[in-house]
Length: 154
Image 1 (cartoon, one colour):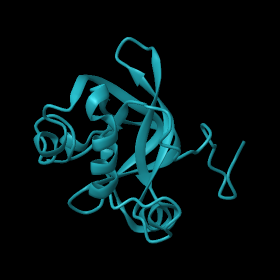
Image 2: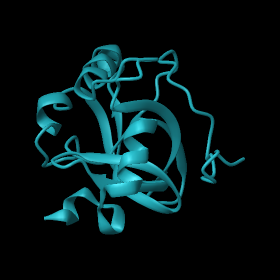
Image 3: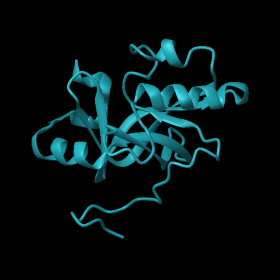
Image 4: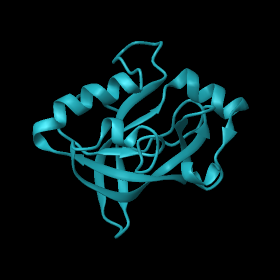
């Protein structure tokens, strides 16, 4: 299935928080980055390298945006929250990303996508993608992070 702009839709978009999923993080929430310890320290059961297929990474500037883009990928971590912190962490990350379901002013959308672990297995995960209006601006005039790794921009 393809969008109006010809981009392949890679999975069903959802923001239903009812299903506890791990999070795919690709920017300031990665280990060693500014928001990792502020938001994730003590709240996670595991963190492992992964990549998000069919996405490209843009510099916001100052913070990253993942945008759907067939044939490319974004590097990050698959983060599994501790069960006792899941709801709290989900709410904290929604606030960090200024995501409000259904609000057209949101800069990001929280959607379920398949992330690929280092061993090649996949896992459904929440990921914050650029909202449609932000994605359109980035595709037109944004700064692409070559190679899809936020850490490589330095």
